[in-house]
Image 1: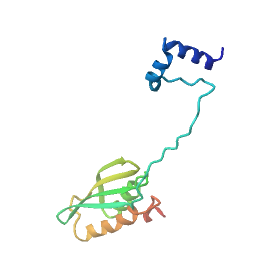
Image 2 (image 1 turned 45 degrees about the vertical axis):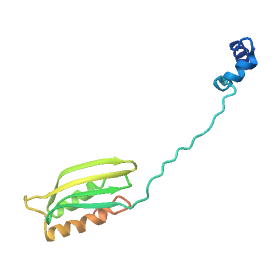
Image 3 (image 1 turned 135 degrees about the vertical axis):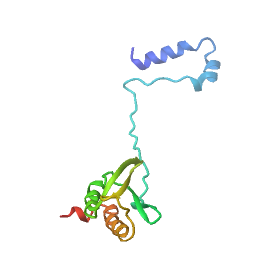
Image 4 (image 1 turned 90 degrees about the vertical axis):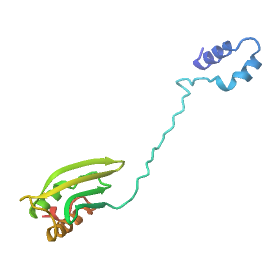
Length: 148
């Protein structure tokens, strides 16, 4: 006896007496499990809609003093390695670094300070922002400072 015939025989044994009555009443709730030979396979293509936003750079300031940078990019490669060398050349060090993944984007928060303990304001603040922007907005994940 084939598995399909066995399934039909065992299913009809479940419905006693008035088969038509019970079948009409319980029909939607009775299901026949497919056999190994008759299983249908379907491929499910999962798609995720990812925003096509540009990189975002936000400078955090305490008055005129630059204190932190937050960079949000679609690429999962962090920019901290290139950025740290550039900042160090300006006399600025990274005092705190956080990275977190948000869906398909990477958010990096970098708290900075001067190597001598002074504040990053005025011309140094403008120079720092000007140095950070090309690196953070680079679509290749490597800014001008990494090119040699």
